[in-house]
Image 1 (cartoon, helix red, strand yellow):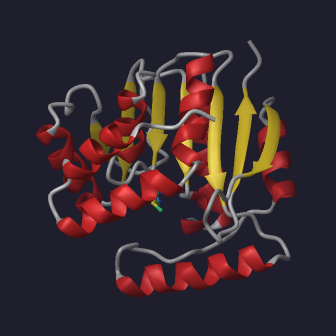
Image 2 (cartoon, protein in one colour):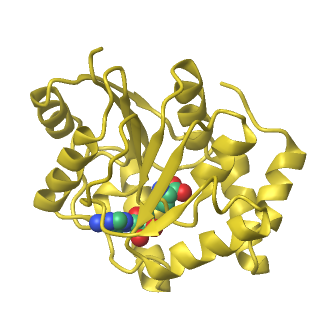
Length: 221
Ligand SMILES: C[S@@+](CC[C@H](N)C(=O)[O-])C[C@H]1O[C@@H](n2cnc3c(N)ncnc32)[C@H](O)[C@@H]1O
């Protein structure tokens, strides 16, 4: 897996305007393998990317710095995150290249390509997960990939550690809503294969103690 050099990582972190966010971004980009995994997949087949639940726009910044961004739209329903992300992108002169929009994840756009849904699903109940994933699938181009990173419901110490950390995240107020429903691998296989996609799932916890998986669902060409 390719990684980003320390200078580019530092530049992204410094574009955020609170020291607390800068430290968070630096730590996240240095330890979380999800962004590099998405960049590697997109680099193999460059297409526009819809980033559902984009938060403060880290994936867009990362893909741009890695030189693999074709076209991008990030959407999130949390105004604080969208505003923080937009301020950082303006600061880097990237607000036009990496646009962020305040919207629910089930909103339709004229973009067709890949779709990323990183660490979002478990904040929704089962019905809303389905709605968001159906919308994500509708944005795939032929050969496009739906790239989901999520905790999956299973029996493991990593799953228990993740649930504890989610409790503290929600208590801190950083996430507006706490975890609602952790999907299982079987649930995602059934839903995405039912939509005609080829699905593969692999573990992706990197150097974190958390229970994370990368789910790649590809639309046949
Ligand atoms: C843990 S953050 C992940 C942020 C980003 N994907 C990343 O990995 O850097 C989860 C994000 O999903 C957003 N989110 C949750 N439910 C959503 C929904 N229904 N529509 C849009 N965004 C949503 C939250 O506001 C939050 O910013």
